[in-house]
Image (tube, rainbow, N blue to C red):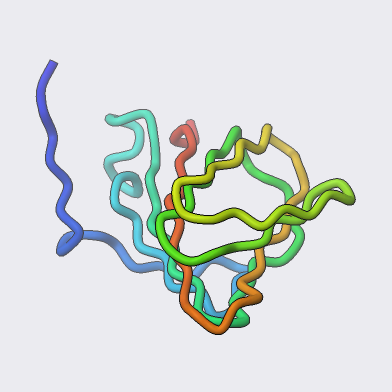
Length: 114
């Protein structure tokens, strides 16, 4: 075993399809994902930012770290606040919205794709 530090300054910026007003950075994952087995993304949602209704590619956990984000899935709508989390199983359809006048941030944690 070993400790592997991944710094925010080294995070990879990317632009996922179906996202508007969202600035995600890969804290852990990308090229090193197979070695770590997991990806961790920090996503910043501007006011009005959203992710379209889309299926989750794998089991996914969202942890809200700032602000409030609304999750919509299977006819259910929930607004999450700091330190609330939600788990979506692979294939679950979800939409994410920032309906507030303030930015919001969340961690996205999922297994690395094989």
